[in-house]
Length: 103
Image 1 (cartoon, rainbow, N blue to C red):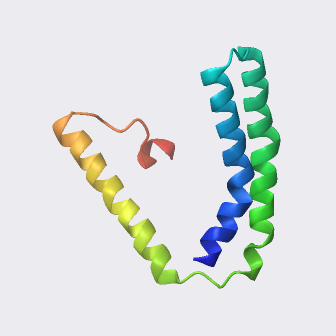
Image 2 (cartoon, rainbow, N blue to C red):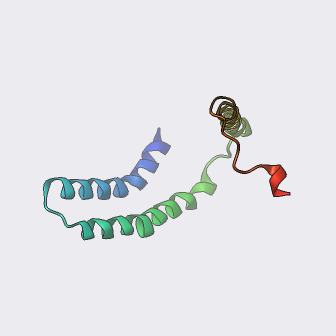
């Protein structure tokens, strides 16, 4: 739980910035140009700084269990394959890209 609280504390300035922007546009006449500038700041400066800070402590974390990765990405692969089969069979949707066409 402390890892969650640590990451939440790192991300809380961004959540606070989003909340302030929402409240200003919802309850006061906040110009759209200022909202656009705040949005650009969030995506160009605040988020990369937050991600860099979070990833700088990544080496101190315990190693990831390979079984967890296999379970997650295996589940993603199963859902992807089922979706492709359903799209092809029920919607008559051919894939836009195939490996045979790339060769």
